[in-house]
Length: 63
Image (cartoon, rainbow, N blue to C red):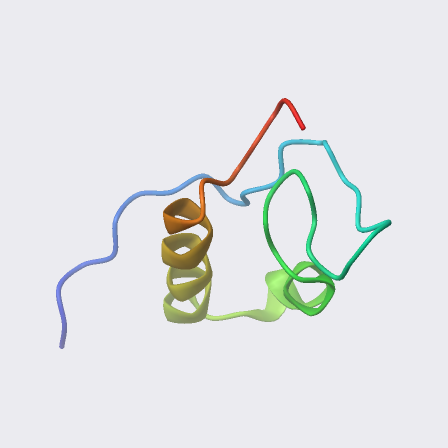
């Protein structure tokens, strides 16, 4: 088994939800598909999303 996953909030959502101009939320950085499937994703899948969005500078409260 790999290293334990880091502690994260339940979701990267920051209540700045907008996918008006593309398929990526301006608040959390997740794609529409990732938002829709978040509750059914495994911890490892969620961690991959977390790593990507953090590297891209998300979540953003002031967009």
